[in-house]
Image 1 (cartoon, rainbow, N blue to C red):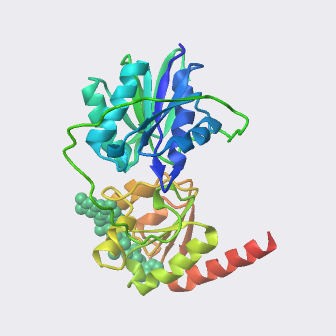
Image 2 (cartoon, rainbow, N blue to C red):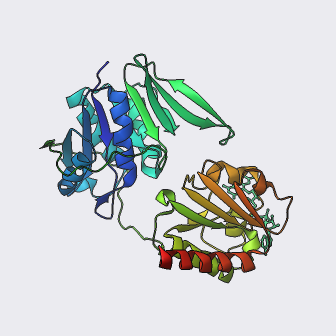
Length: 325
Ligand code: FAD
């Protein structure tokens, strides 16, 4: 059954986040040959429509309004609901990001619709759409079939491959005028934590440190390794609680969920709450002094040793490989 599916694009630093392109790919599966409509919400975002189309959106609707400069659940839900009202789609897909996690339940409630959240896979089978999603903190996966008339889902970043960028693709770009009103929150200022380089939730490589890193300075060799691999640094809650790093780096049940191609855990014991945030990484390397550490149970490669010896050695070897490649 061909469906019309709406995808909300997420904008950061003047560009569409990769998860928006992954959402387009998921939406194509949900659409089963129907139309994928990208939606851009902000105060000056229309220039990004082309990029949405190059990554698979058939057309794009832009909602621009001064009150949409910063994300607020009231503002963005009014914008998205106005698009839904106009388009009457059979599907909506958002990224399972901080924004998507906040916005999707609100919009789903307003539409009196169900919501399948945090999907890591989507497939069409015999007219039905099946979503794969992790349960029990990532220990198991379930397949959920959408039975509502409206299929509404959020997808976990880094799990569904985006379509190849095709600059020859064209599509209609239209704007929808929406008057945003009754905002209950107004963002006066955004204070950004200085983050080094790659966005942790979208990084292909994550080098993560635990209490075994022992100090703030102990994170420096991890940052060097991450730099060489073009990755980001993450941490366990143990390291954050000990004030070795900022809580924005925390990975796990109460932190960020990451699914990079490569996760290198350094001095992390592998508590279940940490595994909840990283065990779906494609390849896991664990470095720990304790051969009995739980992290080795989920690791594809384990190195029993002192991280302060192993991490610099890895950095040097990767540097050599980069020189020769
Ligand atoms: P530890 O358990 O102290 O492990 C340190 C490891 O470093 C040890 O295995 C040790 O062998 C190794 N080590 C020490 N020195 C070296 C060295 N020189 N070289 C190599 N290895 C070395 N935790 C999270 O991470 N994320 C969460 O989101 C999270 N949420 C939680 C939510 C709740 C409700 C609760 C109760 C807990 C949560 N936790 C979370 C905490 C979790 O239970 C663990 O306490 C925490 O993950 C432990 O951090 P750690 O592995 O860094 O420290």
